[in-house]
Amino acid sequence: MAGKPKAGRRAAGGPRPGGQPPAPLTAHRGDLEPDEPYDRLLFADTAFDEVTAGNCHFMDCAFRNVLFSGGRLRKARFTDVTMAEVRFVATDLTETGWQDVTLTGCALAGVPAFSAALRRVTFRDGKLDSVNFRAGTLTDVTFENCLLRDADFGGATLLRVSFGGCTLTGADFTKVTCTDVDLRGAELGITAGYSSLRGATIDTVQLVGLAPLLARHLGITVSD
Image (tube, rainbow, N blue to C red; front, side):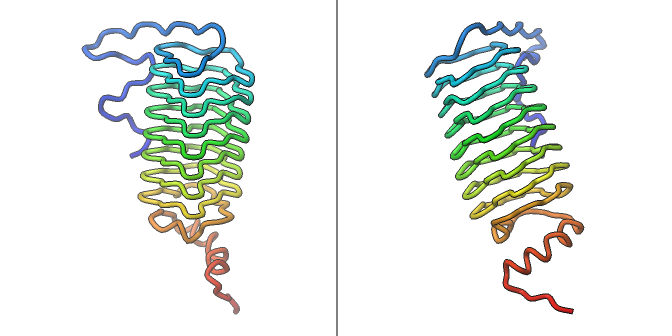
C-alpha cells in the first residue's frame, strides 16, 4: 500500500542499521545554492524568497516551518526527507525528483511541478492549490486527508496512488494513465478526464455522484 514504510526506507533522523542511534541533524544557515548536495541538514523556521537552487540534492534532511516564496528548484531531488508545515508559493518544482518523502501539514499554491517524479511519497493533512503535475510520474504516492483544488494531473502516470479522505475540487485527469489508483473515501470534484479513470477504483457513493457527469461525457441522455 502506498505510504507504508518499505524495506530499507528510513526517514530523516531515523534509526540507522544495527540499532545505532541516529546522528543529530545539523541546522542549516544561509541561503541555498544551485547544484549543491545537502546531506543530513535541518531547515527550520526560515524563509527562502526567490531562491534559485536548481539541481540540488537534499538527502536525509528535515524541513520544519519553512516558506518557499517564488524561486526555482527545478530538477532538485529530495531523498529520505521529511517536511512539516512547509509552504511552497509559486515555486518552480518542474522536473523535481521525490523519493521516500513525507509532507505533513504542508501547503503548495500555484506550483508548477510538471514532469516531476514522485516515488513513495505521502502528502498528509495538506493543501494543494493549483498544483500542476502534468506529465509527471507518481508511484506509490498517498494523498491522505488533503484538499486538492484545481490540481492538474493531465498526461501524468499514476501507479498505486490513493486519495483517502481527500477533497478534490476542479481536478483535471485528462489523458492520465491510472493503474491501481484508489479514489475511495475522497470527495470527487473532477472537471475533465473522466475517460482516463480506467484503472481507478471508486465506491458506490462516488459512482452515484459521478453518474450524471459520466453520462454527459458519453453523450447519454437520461430522461424519466
